[in-house]
Length: 418
Image (cartoon, rainbow, N blue to C red; front, side, top):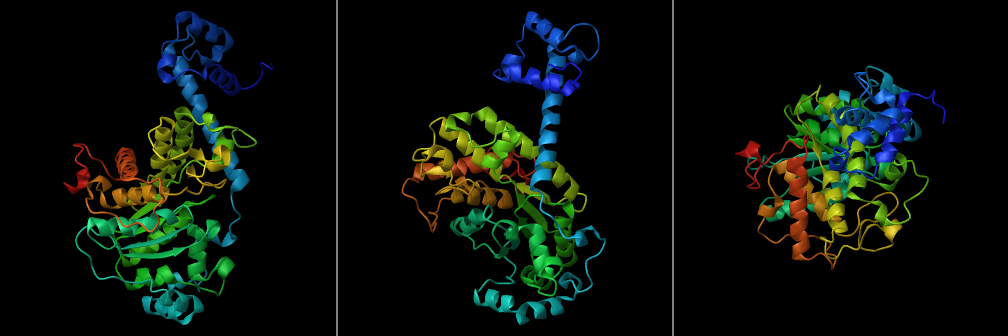
């Protein structure tokens, strides 16, 4: 071993040596074990008194973990960040950007184009009458990770007693990303002179209470603040929500430095999911903090916490009818994740829909007594499983620090509503 390497590498080795320990076990390190660690890693003795305390050990361990995660995020960004038009670097968008025009001009562009006629024929409303108090009129972009929630939310709200007003402009993968839709709607950069201003027409000509996004690789704050500024111009006080996804196999390979998928699902312990969540949560927390410099009304739809909670319950045998975690690893049809890219397996669109409902409306889906008429009904999804999904969704939402919802008295109603 080269003893001239930076202290970070020593600490990583120490982490590897102690990996089988839980946090509780780590706190029970004996004096002799601490003495051994001090001999191997004297840099961990923060105060230089010649003794390694449990506090010093844990502090060094945490610092190394955070540094390693930060390096992994930077490496991931370097490998997977899409190339964006240099126009994003400028202070202003091109003068022909649709968002710079008047509401009447924007609507005229929308209705005159082939895309406009297609959307109109699809009967996708660009405005809704003012609903009852508390009901949100929502515009949104998104891709295949937001689609399950968009698909099931209307059935959930219908059972809750109201129709969900939605106006969406989605795509698949990158074509549903926040930046792609801004360029496409404005007719700039990649879509220069070919605007498709569906949401811009809706936002500028009608009233809305919220917007939802599906994040994508390499996102920058400006992609979101461009939408925020436009929404605030016409509908001040709107709320903004973005999903945080869930652990994909590519994330597993990145975080754990693997060249391929795990050989079996036994790899996926609670600790593995916790580490994957910590990795992502740090990035989303920083991102939301930046966006909140523009408006305080930015929140997370915690789909990640919900799906990993479901995964943990499956490992404990508490999801009857679910056969596996990742279909491409375990080979089971009724798995939580259906393919290599991480799309949800059968039935889990309901869980995402419940997360949407719980976050947007601050109420537990467990309080909905009416039968929910979902379009898709896999045979294994019993009433008991549906009840578990509702419980998981509420738990994920009220425990997430960026959802905007808490429930201190446990009555299923967000504290901000009482």
